[in-house]
Amino acid sequence: MSNAPQHNNMPKLNFDLSKLPNLTDLSAENLCENVQAINSLCENPRLKAIMERLVQHSHAFVREVGLTTEEWMQAIEFLTAVGQKCSPIRQEFILLSDVLGISALVDNLNFPKPAISTGESIASEGKGEYMLVLGKVVDTEGNPVKGVTMETWETDDTGMYDTQHDGQFAVDCRGQLKLDDDGLYKFRAVRPVPYPIPNDGPVGDLLQKLNRHEYRPAHLHMMLSAPGFEPLTTALYFEGDPFITRRVITKPSSKIHQLQADTCFIRFPCSPLATPSLVSNRR
Image (cartoon, rainbow, N blue to C red; front, side, top):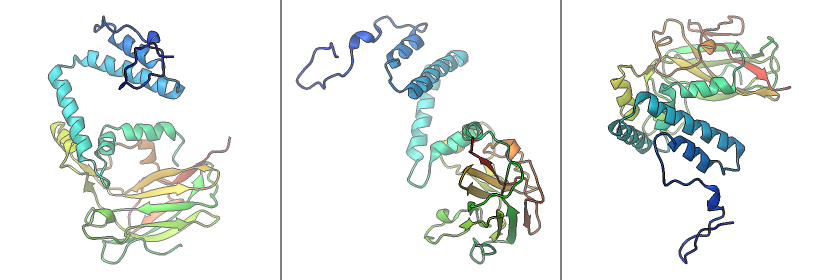
């Protein structure tokens, strides 16, 4: 129950102020402790745990690097610019998460398992050099997976996705396949090419200051799902691409460098450096 004085234009408080710490004597030594105490009234245990670690590590980071007021303001201006660059079709924060390796870390922590309408084309005519993609989706023991739905997408030979072309509303260079009981798939696509991530925003400015390039290696996206299995989102990369080991967006290496020639290959000719597999979620 609130013990704070109430005013006509003041909303009624739903917690006891006496449970909060006295913030009249704050110092660099007790700031972190006091913020933790303020947040301790959180009733959501997961949110409470996340905020405890966020406050703890962010304060420790500021101390470790000796962050200056000027540097902190530059960081705020940078994050503000990142938010301002976002739009319904562009997420600059995800791009920032990608180049910092956080997206890959989250994916790897959540899916730490080992990565081990047939014949139609997902691309219209004139989109690039055609290739035939054939493969088989298996579980981690090598058994075919039944009931797989595969969504796949890629760039055309200009390095652009269909949603990036001005005035193009038709779906192109992407498709959804229902695999047979043997987990087999076969479709025609075009050979994707390396392409730069958007570099006209604050993330691009950051890469330039860090002396990093902005190119992703050529790749074919795949998103797989099946009853009784954890969903898998991965990509196939191509041998000989110089950006595979020097890519701007980090991905778990184990998912890139494993190859099983009998489960997936692309003919144009080239070879993938990753194979799709599904992990059972049965316990």
